[in-house]
Length: 183
Ligand code: IMP
Ligand code: MG
Image (tube, rainbow, N blue to C red; front, side, top):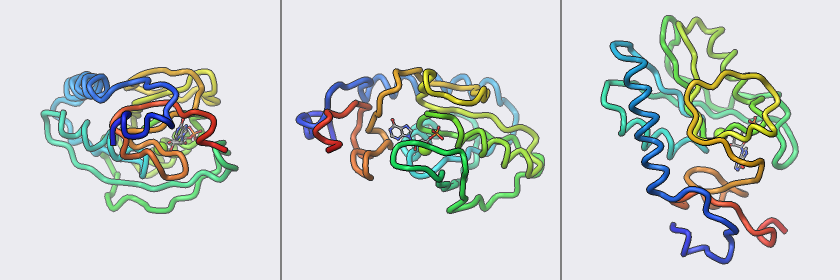
C-alpha cells in the first residue's frame, strides 16, 4: 500500500520508502562493521518490527541468525505501562550469544527496557538495541539504544510495520494520520 492509496487518511508522510531504505542501509553498514566476526542473533519484536527486520537483515552482508518474540505491554489504548507479558518466546538459547533486538519504534521505552533486561538475564554475552524510530520527548527510561534511525516528535505514526488498530502496517512509507481516522 502506498500513500496515494490512503491519501484521505494521511496527514503527513514523514519518511518515504526510499528514505527508509537508505536509512536501513546505513544502519546495516554500522552493524556489519561493529559485529564483524561475531555470531549475532537478531531478535525481532512482533509485529511492528517485521518490515525493519526483513529489510535490515537483507541489507546486512555478514551471517546473522534471526528469532522472534511477541510481547504485550499492559496498558490502555496507545499508552504503555512497562508491565510486559511474553506472548511468544524465543526458540534460541541465548547463552553466550551477542543479541541485537530490532524494534520499530521507542515510545516510552518501557517495553524495551524490560526486554533488554529479560534477555540479558538469560546469559547473553551482549544485548544491544536497534530501533528505526524514537520519540525522545516521551521516552521514560534512560535506556541505551545503540542504533537509531530517526528521532521524531511524539506524534502517533503508522506504516512500515506500525499500525493503528492493526491497519496501515502494509503502508510502504511512515506517516501521521488525520484526526478523523481515530474517531
Ligand atoms: P513503549 O513501551 O511505550 O516504548 O511502546 C513500544 C511499542 O508501542 C512499540 O514497539 C509499538 O509497537 C507501539 N507504538 C509506540 N508508538 C507508536 C506509534 O506512534 N505508532 C504505532 N505504534 C506505536
Ligand atoms: Mg513494536
